[in-house]
Image (cartoon, rainbow, N blue to C red; front, side, top):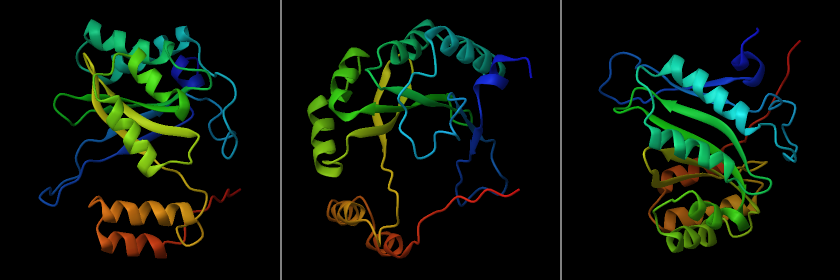
Length: 211
């Protein structure tokens, strides 16, 4: 209870990389949330910065020392810090992911950032991919989104692969924007027609708090 991690991290996700050939459950990857009020914020936009650079460094140092069996390289550490200090206004790092079973282990940052400031942010953190390609992806798959949620893999460089998350408040049956996205993904060969059909019948999710 007296540790920084206890006070700053409200929850930890556990993820597994599974394959059909595995007979045992593999070691998990761990994703820890940096927002101590994450659950209270559900459904509400994040308007304040819940982390200082000092706390961010301390949380990373404490968690990574526990979870990794080797120290980070200076370049990786510098990139992790730059991704925080160069965030635009209203940008936030929500989760840090440690993909421990992968060789070498990968560190990812789950980031929420205004779309209009995203390309400039990638340039500031010395991302080496194609800004034109990213701009085309955003125009094609999320033209009306104002906020982006994404993951960046942090190594001695900021990896060129960007993983986008699209969030919707309702199921595909009730959300025309999600229906259009699924149609576009199928047309581009990024979604199987069977998955498209299954997602259209998915009823969505709900949250229930029990006493």
